[in-house]
Length: 438
Image 1 (tube, rainbow, N blue to C red):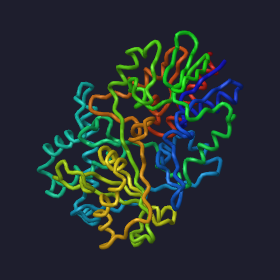
Image 2 (cartoon, one colour):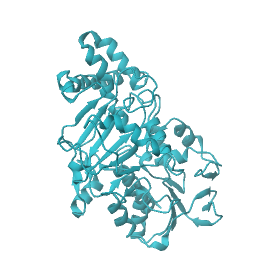
Image 3 (cartoon, rainbow, N blue to C red):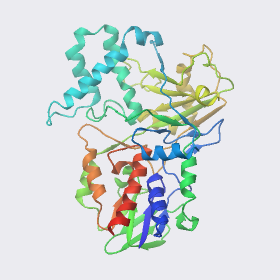
Image 4 (tube, rainbow, N blue to C red):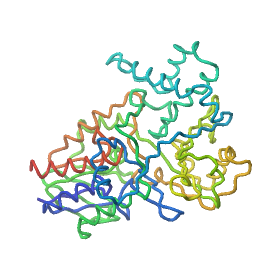
């Protein structure tokens, strides 16, 4: 049996490792000049920064995490200390004084109750359901709570990578099984570990797949007109790439075309744009604040302006975590697109926020910016739901596959969707499918 795997991210690597271990002939085709996909560790700065996935989630039920722990090779850190909150007109003390976390918890329960009150309830945006909550409970809230609890709940944007006005309220809340664990020394150790378990002769980098003919056996054609034949194909390209139509870069022409059982569910799913900005400094001028995370709460009534107070920001305090004077900032949606396209504007954007830590913040010595929205083989971060989207249909259709074509990736699985271990498990699933049923 010969298997071609399209995509050298964690799903493709896992499938390749498991199949090769059983003596299956594997060819792995990766469009970029590296393996790892949306796992990317930058080592040009003061420490290794994961520009893609950073954490292990669902750590009580995460098989990959269990293996990483057992190996003893990973520097793991639970960054679940109490965050330090800042805002344009909001102080950390205000958050507790105004009981914002408690009211935000009630708002979360309101979201749950509304969603599960009926199977026919309309899936409104997170923004619109927050307004319903305010109309119901507003007379029981203080003016400051009515102003800032909606902004407090917007931290969910930093999970999904999209704004609350385009985010599904049905799928907005995040309920991880276990604490979230930061991979402090970089996910590239996992990528290297897996890549070492398949022969380099099986791996073809800088190989962009342009066509797949699945009429009988598999024939894969690349952008440079090379072809690869196999009995089976495992396609692990991101959902954003599956949704493309030729001649867009990265799009795959399928013969016969993908059926509506796949294309219709794909048309009902969105895609997030979570970005990261690393600011390195000569000294850690925020060191007096002993916390591993800062959260910048967006300001009420900012309109459509694009500034640092328009959207929430999550900041990892790398001085606390890794003893280096740097801040790793998470941004989303239009902020990610803007800053990734205008890297020269990064410091102007964040400087007002840095003034919350010191009156005269020094200019960074180095700035590192992700480029996921500009990457034609990613076009963002991971699957995200808009109102009315249904990830279940996508998962079912892609998990069922198309005969000799199988699909894997974070968008093809419900347990661990959008996470490293979900993608890893999907690669394992497809390798097991071929080994057990073919």
